[in-house]
Length: 234
Image (cartoon, rainbow, N blue to C red; front, side, top):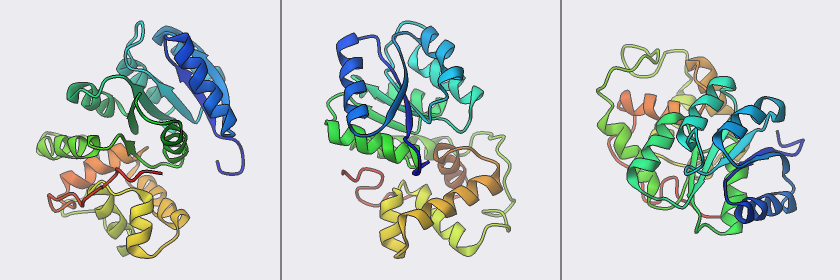
């Protein structure tokens, strides 16, 4: 994905805001392959646009942003959804993440933060407005005892994971970003990405949201979140 422009679709029912986001992304070198103002338009245009990342408002004419997120990922599990919303309400954040969104920014985010978030989400990372990462991790810990159809080994991570992959998985469970993991393990950002992608493939998962919930269910997070986890700024 780094060799070709990241393909982005922008969905927002406010024309001035949508146009501004489109201009900012194009100016940063992203390829905006489609725009939409309603959930119905987004779902109709998504198959032909084939974006890597959908930058999506939650409060749009139906279907809602949460419903669009779920349907988009059913169509293409490799796609990434970054919510860009005026709402920072706990339930909105959790509903979006449970639907499969791998990033959540409030609209007070700066242009630099938006561009960085799109780039990181496209690369498989999770990005949240500061203060929201802990909320998401806390919810995953709360529901970790609920039935989960995700395949798993009986005692911790599957034996086919290497020691390094397991080590990275534990850090993912704590909400650490790729950058933070790379610094902690003295590895390159690309190497961390590769370890996560290999782990996703072995566990038959599609994104870090699924992987984080799985790891927490396995108790790999130690119930703690390091300071600033998932909230590093550009």
